[in-house]
Length: 210
Image (tube, helix red, strand yellow):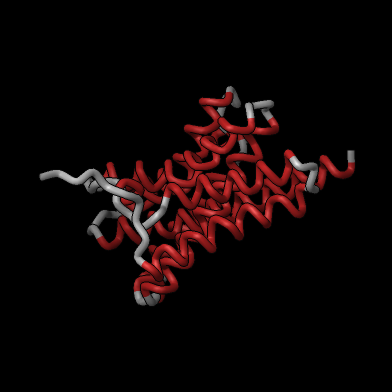
């Protein structure tokens, strides 16, 4: 019981951290595109919680945790408020820091999404897919709302990094590793792969159109 409690607490902390990071990112995208306060709040909410809502609907966790637990929208709106009231501070972040925060949010959500799917007795293979969806779903919704091609479809090893991190965590759990070890392993794998892909400009193969 104690181990299960600690695992649940760890999952919540990771989920809330990822929510805040992605909310800030979504709000910054709204500010850069000239949206008003309401648009900023909507985009922060969608970026931070969209992937988790899609995951919860698919695994049968209804109503989605982001709707059921007030802490999630509160965290998302806190991230949006930070951007709104400290625009000068946030928008002057170096691009390298923004990339790092994005990779951190992606890694946290990939691990949290896969872990929650496993808690609902989803097959490990599908749990990996749910981790990937949680990581990239919010950003995809954000880009669609801004009428952009979703970043996940053209960025250097983005969704693939989320899937890899989720796979590492799920594999470690299947090998009977403790959640306190498996979860950081998955997060680190996703983060490392994403950052190296940006540094080395790695991309997945593309169709050669002649």
